[in-house]
Amino acid sequence: MADSAHVDTFARDHLPPPSALPEFLFDRPELQLPPRLNVAAELLDAWVAQGQGDRLCVQGEIDGQPVRWTYAELQQRANRIARVLVHEMGLVSGNRVLLRGANSPMLAACWFGVIKAGGIAVGTMPLLRERELLPIVDKAEITHALCDARLADALHAVQAARPRLAQVLHFNGGGGAGSLEAAMAAQPPSFATVDTAADDCALIAFTSGTTGVPKGTMHFHRDVIAACRCWPRHVLRARADDVFIGSPPLAFTFGLGGLLMFPLAIGASTVLVEKASPDVLPQAIAQYRASVCFTAPTSYRAMAAQAAQHDWSSLRKCVSAGEALPAATRLLWKQATGIELIDGIGSTELFHIFISADEAQARPGATGVPVPGYRACVLDEQGRELPPGQVGRLAVKGPTGCKYLADERQAHYVQNGWNLTGDAYLVDADGQYVYQARTDDMIVSGGYNIAGPEVEGALLLHPAVAECGVIGAADEARGQIVKAVVVLKPGFNGDAALVKELQDFCKQTIAPFKYPRAIEFRTSLPRTETGKLQRFRLRDPA
Ligand code: 3UK
Image (cartoon, rainbow, N blue to C red; front, side, top):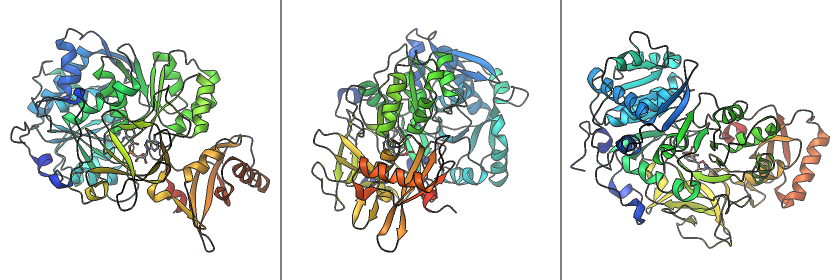
């Protein structure tokens, strides 16, 4: 720790104590990382230094105009931003810089600018409002921000309430006087990337948690590089000529890894589009001839429904994460595009995917096996390892792991060196990990343990069902009953006959005791910005 490059020691000072950290595994040859490491030096400067600066790096739009930047062009913009941060905004290495904006090439340049200057990037979801930004600014003691001009209002309100956040510049607003772009234009395009220690903090990612104060997960430079060398290398196996695209925001580590770190780690290019909802993503895939796609299971399901209208011929690899992938969705996508989805479970705490299966290993209903570099097991309530076939708590360790910023909940996520993700899993006879539910979402009805996602999987096989969520509803006789909230496809009517039909359908598809005794029809389901179903809002509509 003595040779940290950070002048501002906030991150180091607020790490969990060593005894509360998970065990880290670096036993693979590709995980032997040097003591000095900077993500921007590895992913950006190194390509330019190797004479690869003219390769295409990032595409998208700025102010409605198409953008195509090479590695050298992104590097020069990041360099100018680093200079603006240091020389105009008074950034000192180790300061936290809030980033606010939808995915765009400029947001990527800002991210690298912060990292080059030795700052700590704190990405925030574009939809967050003042009351959600305030706890992040407080918790991470944020002093600087780079913000998309179209999202300036909420941040102005935060600034008014928090004098600490004194330095803010805006981008993507036309580049007029006072903008980040104008400040960049006054700086030369070179910058000496700060020589950070491998265990200096590079980013703090806040969890998309459903309850309580958001948790900040700290990630070192080495965590990001280690993640680039595990799942992408061994499971995704993309190539330098691949074009990455997808929906998750760069503020979400699923998006930061999949749409920025992983393509740049192999010299590939990425498309950063502001809107990547299922109704516009297919068009963007065709327009940019994208070959590797990252999005959530519900998005694949929605895109599959309109597959016939689009050109998927450029697409090679499709990654699903964020929530469990129903077997029905895997099948629909394969039928629509011919592509076998790559499912993977990751978390903000571990940065990215740690259990997954490539196209060849993929099995409907299973997530896959531990990614090389990671180890996993299923534990009982006492922390003992369970044999195959039994449902328990998923435990993981690898080169990355949970480091909450000053948070008591570290002791919930990390126990005896394992990261406990809060998921109920079983390992089947083939060693495949089979997702059951979030531990808190297991339904106990009449003495049976029932996993809501399994019932959802059954309902999704019925032709009338567009989307659904299954929860436990309080019941005097049974403690809980299985309740399904269903969104129907157009042309279906949610009447008593359909309720009966869906119930019978479930009884034929899975063990009859799991069928939903109550079914409610709605026009949409509550989801987070990252595509996760908010079950707590189904349970308690208020
Ligand atoms: C759930 C899954 C079943 C699971 C994430 C890939 O989702 C990500 O991070 P979050 O912190 O949530 C983590 C939790 O989400 N989950 C994610 N993927 C799957 N459940 N199958 C899956 N394939 O409950 C997990 O504990 O928002 C995903 C990469 C980076 C990420 N941050």
